[in-house]
Length: 107
Length: 122
Image (cartoon, rainbow over all chains, first blue to last red; front, top):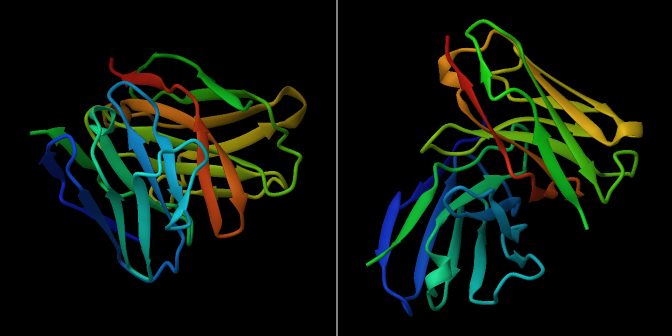
């Protein structure tokens, strides 16, 4: 299995901050990396697919980058509704493993 | 509009077999490149990919669970079924099904069902 490692595991930030969450794959996965947002008690929601493509209906303050083994999700200006847990997922090979999650909390 | 909903028991006993059904609408599992996956999440923990079935009946499983998990589809009923044998308390989790979009390596899960919490306890 390809292991996905996110950092940090948790992050405190303020409304208006720019934040970056990183995800590292245990081997090269080209650009086959998705990002999801999950709020408490809710199903995950797709934000970014193929490393940098914004899913329809997702705010442009979310952006993704990276290829190979290192990837990043950036939120340009945090809004109150962005405080959630974020997961990366690789789709290079099955099982399409997820990272352990990054919990974004209000400072 | 694509929707999915999981159904099945909320409580199972250790060693029993779990059967979950994902009933979906808004797409057909006979359409090329379409798939449905199962993902679970233990309370307070991360997402775990379990299995995926494609439009052509190709099936993929998590190696760690492959001996216990079976995925199948009923295209006429718009349903995908997940069975997991020999349930253990560590299998307590919210189980989600999700629509696989995209093509080839460029794929994603969107949307997801609301999830169903399954507790394993005697």
